[in-house]
Image (tube, rainbow, N blue to C red; front, side, top):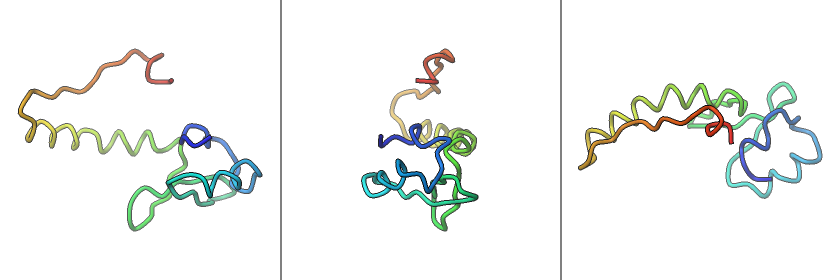
Length: 86
């Protein structure tokens, strides 16, 4: 296990998470007994389930920046729901 999806719903002090903390390239912290992932300095911990909301706030700005600098047209991808959940 090293993906963010794998830590969703896990308790920070579980043996599984404690074994993985030293193996992953990102930081895991504890909040109310659950795993949280700091996403930017200063660290603002988000539970993995809330990362989707944070990403949704950042993506429009990223799309606009890409459109301003890309030599070809850039458009957001459209995927069916089943493809997004994999």
